[in-house]
Amino acid sequence: MNTLKNLFWILLLIPLLGVAQVSKDSGLYKEILATDAALFESYNTCDLETHASLISEDLEFYHDKGGLATSKEDYMTSMKANICGKVERILTPDTFEVHEIKDFGAIALGKHSFHNLNEDSYSEPSKFITIFKKTDKKWIITRVISLH
Image 1 (cartoon, one colour):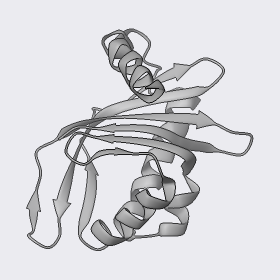
Image 2 (cartoon, rainbow, N blue to C red):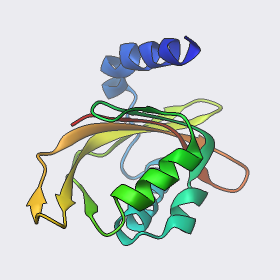
Image 3 (cartoon, rainbow, N blue to C red):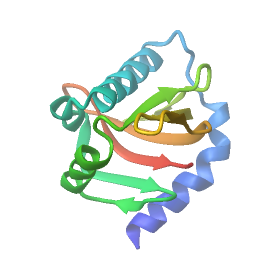
């Protein structure tokens, strides 16, 4: 129930995010964009070690078609079985936004599409929301909402 409550609040606050977007010239924007790029470079090249290092142990991944994943181990197993060598992510230009979450981290949102390498087909751009937590050493992904 707590997970549903958290998702409710996230979705409720989404319309307000446009007001708090940080500048694309800010250090925060550049750090989050670089972390997103590293995450999806590892996704696109099947670098599972790097990918896992960017994912929180308490990951919650909400996928409109795949459901809710709350296990990092299950997420990584699914990635290896369903993504590696089969799918690439493409960030839609000029859609990436970053919003600071005081004393925690940041939220990134935007649009991306996927290239199915087996069928050589591309999805329509779809929305994503990623919540990043700042640790002592780096940024990690704690929550993802992926809509297709």
